[in-house]
Image (tube, rainbow over all chains, first blue to last red; front, top):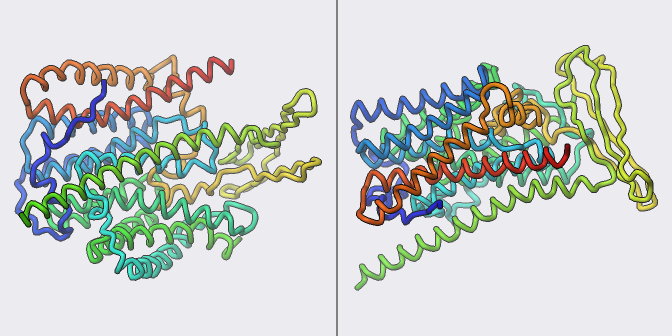
Length: 284
Length: 217
């Protein structure tokens, strides 16, 4: 019943050439094209707001409606390929809201919740890459020669970022005492699931496609803004400010290195410090 | 000749990449299902937690339920429920720890969420929509009130209707696609297939939940 069709019928040469450069010189986009992408952004913000502050059911319905509307518009209206790519990347967000908020997570043990939730997000992102015929190596910007350098850069950015975030949130220790096995478990969770999942979505797809459509400055701002919108539920202005700043830093890191390795490491280290290290050092 | 060789190499690289992507998606599916499997497997441990008090409300007592599995006794599973009168001020956290002792050695369990609620709301939690939403999203009450609700708007039915509509669309447009290439329909089919897959997974989980609920009652 469900078919995964050969996407070559729909893909154009523009799509295949996408992996070449992050800092692509963007052509001037039309007013309607800008309005279309902005409308999707507003739709996502509205969806998250309704979901978190008003009614979960309406939030999920808006997410479903938004995803279907974006796909309908993209199929019916002829837009430039770079705008289509950008809209398709943004459409992943309502899809993931729909996906992650409609599964019976209460069945899953809390210990496995994080990898279970993120495996859905990662699968969604990779499915997108599969359909668009994107090369994973190009997408991640993986280079053996620069791996150590990017790891060190990620560490250098992640440590101060995680420390600042800890002093804003002050999370309590998850376990009565520090244990190495939990540290290792969290390192695996944060780097392989959280780091890769979020960086692939926000930097690897959204920021990159926005850069091709509108230039890197707007891409950096737009991707960080969407990243912040997804944290709207925290209801903390300092935390939202930090998330926006964190999004900008990770975005610049991606822009400068043209690789997702450094942002993934920075993101993972930030979270490991926040959850598994600093709460035990600065215990109340 | 040289150009053809380069093109062939690029094509091979792309095919390999597609295969790798497909395999990773498969593995992620295994991780997803594995988490459910491990949860079910964990229920055979000597101590399992039935209720996790995650966000205590000031002034209200906290109920924690533990199940002790002892195959040599009858009944095999004994349920213990503790009511903890809550003197905690707001924002404080309470941890429960259970220890069992048997001939095979001691077993210890710290029954609370893997991460404190604040941490869910940080960078790590964008997927889980932060403290308030995540803690409620991972509860049975959230799921049942939204997906198995007999009064008001039932999301499960809505999702099923949309899924049926999309499946009918995919089925009806198949001959059209085979007859001649219609760009609009092709694009719609490919894009809607992603939505359809997601709805199908959600629908399957709703059915599984209903079956489990019927069996349990």
